[in-house]
Every structure is written in C-alpha cells, then in structure tokens.
Amino acid sequence: MSTAIRQWRGFKAATRLGWQISSNWTQPLVFVLYSVLRPLSAAFILVVMYRVISGGGANTAAYLAFLVSGVAFWSFVQYGFAGLSNGIAEDRGEYKMLKYVYTSPAHFYVYLLGRGLAQLASAVASALIVLIVATIALGLPINPLHINYPLLLAASSLALLAVIGLAMAFGVLLLQARDAHGYGELGSGVLYVISGAIFPISVLPGILATIASLSPLVYWMESIRRSLLGSQAIRMFPSLSDGDVLLRLLVTTAATLILAHLVFSWADRTARQKGLIDMETNW
Image 1: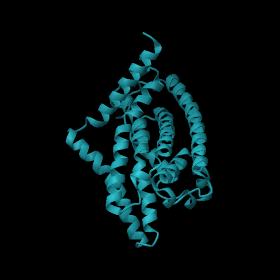
Image 2: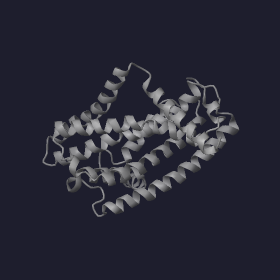
Image 3: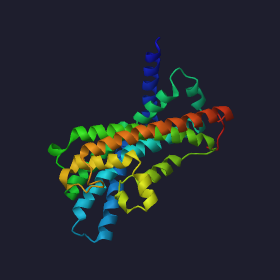
Image 4: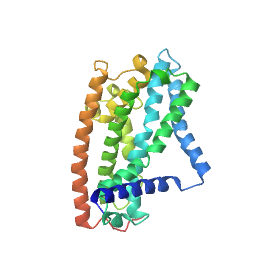
C-alpha cells in the first residue's frame, strides 16, 4: 500500500472519529437543537447587550451587522480551535488513545487535520443559521445575490488553515499540563478579544492593537464583512482595498503556519522526551 493511500485512510478515519466524538453525546434531535440554539443564543445575547448599552443610536443598524457577522463566523474558531485543542487532551486523558495515534501509519499532522476538519460542517451550519435568522429578525443589509462569494470562500479557506494550525500547536503544547481540559475555550476566548469579531481593533490599547494587526483572523473578519455587506460594512482598514486585505490575510496566514509548525515541533519533541504522550492525567 502506498504512503498516499495510508495517509488518506488515516485522514478519513480521523475525520469520522472527530465527528462521532462531537455528536454522539446525546440523541440526534437534541444535538440538532443544541447546534441551532447555541450560536443563536450567543449572537442575540450580544445584540440585546449592545442595544441596551447604546440606547438605539443612529449607527445601531450598521454596527449590528458588524457584530452579528463576526459572531456568526466565529463558530469556525470555536469549533476548530477549541474543539481540536481540547480533542488532543481528551485523546490522552479521557480515551487514553493518543499513544496509539502516534504509532499508527498516518502522520500525526494528518490525524489532527482530520479531527479539525470534522468540525467544519457544524461551523458552516452555525454561521448560516445565525446569518439567516439575524437577517430576517434584525433586518440586516445582507442580500444573497450581492455577496462576494469568491472573496468569502478564499478568506475563509485561509483562515481555516490558520485556525487549525494554531489549534494543533496549542493542543500539543498543552500536553505539558497534567489536566488541560477546557483550555481550548480559554485560548479561543483570547483570540475572540483581539480578532475584531465584536469590535474594531482600533479600540484596543496600543500594544494589543499592534498584536491584533498581526493576526490573520482580523483580516478574515474584515474580508467577511466586505463580502457580505459591501459598501455598507464598517471597515477596520478603510484605506485598504479588498485585494490588499486578502493579501495581508495570505501573508499573516503563512507566517502563522510557520510559527505554529515551530511551536508544534518543539512541543511534540518535548512531550516525547518527557513521556507525556501516555501520561496518566487527572481527568
């Protein structure tokens, strides 16, 4: 059997495993309801908070579109980053199978990529549900016929690579901890603040705004809003064209993947040397 076929089979098995783990904790109907209500509740809680705080000012509609679009597509980070990095801890601590994954024919990268992409269907469904319901309920200026689909797909594909790369590095880094369960949500929460998902990065303090401008997630959020809302979008980078934003997303994604690979390699090597792959944890 060729190496390519072995890697492909490992990828398919990892994707199926990731989906089974994320969806088999309850009955199918309950899982569907949870998948629908979770993103909707998160989006509308923020909407209510903003309307109460702002008092319904003149710029409310424009900012609501900014807010809802960011929250809708944040599901890619929530499912991809938190789901994958938590999954590595679960494979070691709860299921005690990480050591077998390391010794399997499939490369560890391939396995983690499959686990990460297993969350893609849930993330896409979550984003669509929030956008459709919010557009109808809040009257957002989103017209399916006017969406820039090439920009949306290109930006989301690059961002997904960056998110999975970050999740791989973060998850393997957490093998240094005895009990790392739940740290995926913590890391996702930090990214949430500096990604431009709920407010422009210009409101952040100087050093945080500089750090945020180096993240591919900021340019992804900018591209999403431009593709969905066109000229009505509140822009974090008004001086940049759509092509400039996409180029920055490409460059920062490449830099993020290189940095993630370096961190992953160091953490993986350290975990092997210290015997952390099959360490018993306080699960």
